[in-house]
Image (cartoon, rainbow, N blue to C red; front, side):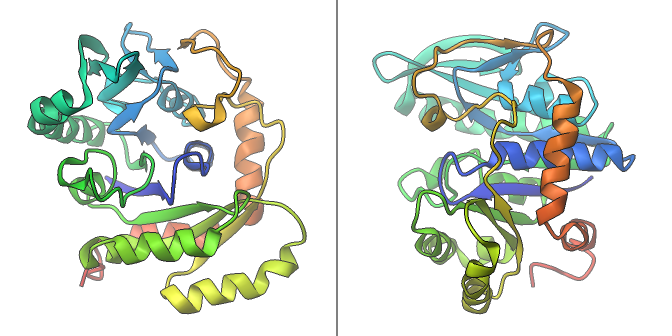
Length: 289
């Protein structure tokens, strides 16, 4: 199963929407494509047709991919609870509510096995997997037992595209800092960069694109303008100001044309040919050498 992993320099940089758009483009091109997020921390959830609870973003991405959502697309869902606790949902079923440290100690090895099994199950039915990371891949204090970013890219053996949010400022530092903090082997997986939420005249950022590419040796695949009123439900907690936590059920589907509009927005500003080259050439020419 070919694939790509969308990672970010931080939370709320737009990973979910970009992964959703990529799912729709590949689906429209006739591929059997599946979303995947190994571990999701969010109170917004999605109930599959089989009654399994997964992260809302993966349910939405499955809709965009024109396939039925399953628990294999988001094997671990952590729902934050008061008192530094998290409700542990494994393969769509609630197990227990425990502290973050207890979770790291008790579920790391179990989580790895469940994630590996989920990827294997998806590979039986799909040609392409679009994997979404969580937060940043360089949370140094957590990386010894991480289940959401580079460990998963390695497990699935896919290249990585790094997304940075220019709207919040500091885009150059966030890109360079992230790449510098990655191990040499992890950095070699990063084959493209996307600048997201751009406002203003694109021509004014040409020098910025050139500088980043020269500094990193990694191509900028696109500079995506900020998309207003996309009507795709948000997921990240940083985007939830003033909203109630709520489940998003499979019957409450987004209008299908919204996914087409999101995909068109992506294609208008992304080097789709280059992204395809990254995905389909991975592993052929010893990319990690």
